[in-house]
Structure formats: structure tokens, C-alpha cells
Amino acid sequence: MKLKRALIFSITLILIATTLLVTVLLIYSPLRYRAKIYSDCNEWIDPAFLEANKVKGANYNNPAYDETQAWTEENPKYYRDQTAPSTRTYVITDEDTFHSIYGEGTLEVDFEKEMVLLHLFSSGYPRREYRMKKLELKGDALNIHYKMESNGNRKDYSLPKVKCLTVKMKKLDVSTVAFTEL
Image (cartoon, rainbow, N blue to C red; front, side, top):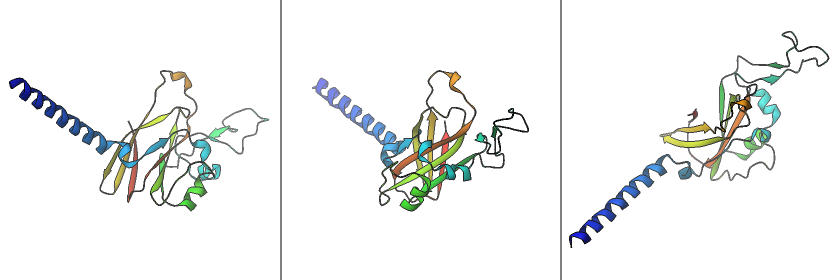
């Protein structure tokens, strides 16, 4: 009898602990919002859009660079826009805006049920993958926590370039969206 009660008590505790764990994971999980991050999507973005939406710290090709001359301070191959903001974030909730930023056939989005978030920032590791770790919705403020995946090799560092992160997710009524790198 005691063994049966102990077994029932143990199973009950395990079920309660599992329920609590699943609840906590779902509260902060991107799965709750059907969110998926795309970190290798720079090619999807219209170059004219990127040119008009520069970020501080990224190197951009200098259109006035003369290849017949030496690369000097007076003839730089790249330049940085120090007046630009360090990051830019866009909430895209309609097809027209989406197609003005992204090329055709890049991502299937049902704008009745979904939205797209675009985050631009400067990175010295533009080829590395980024993963979404946590998604927090507090009132009408959404915060997406992401982290760069490390491959253990620091030799892949390059001149900082603009990095684009795209998140496709369930449509939410939010007024602010923030991306936080962990």
C-alpha cells in the first residue's frame, strides 16, 4: 500500500514538474508565435533599400573609388556612415511593403496571419548564423533575443558589413520591436 502511494505521489510530482517546465518554455519560446529566424538573407534584400538604410559601423563600397589609383585615405575603397543609427528594425505587415524591400519569391508570407520583422546591424562576422533564443511580448512591446553561433574559429572575421536578420512570425499587434543580442 505504501509503495503504491509513493509511486502515485512520484508520478504526480513528475507530471507537475513537466507541466511547469513546458509552460515556462512555451511562454518564452519562439514556437508559441510560430517565429522563425533567417540569418543568411542579405541577398533577399533590395540593394537600393540597403543603400538608403545604412547602419553605423558597417563598411560600404565607395562609389567614387578609383581602381586605377592606390587605395589611400583620399581614395578609400570603403566608407562608413557615422551619422547612421547603429541598428534599424522594420515591422512589415503588408505585401506591398514586403515586396518593396524583399525580392520576389524569397519568402512565402500570409499577411492575413503573419508578419515579417527585419533587423539591420553591423557585424564583423557576416557569414555566421544567428539563432533566436527567446521571444518576449510584454503588452505591445516585443523583444527578440538572438545569439551568433560560434564555430570556434575567429579567423573568419572580416571588415564589418551590414547583417540582415529576418523573422517570420504570427501577426501581433505591437508598437515597438527590439532585437537584443545575447
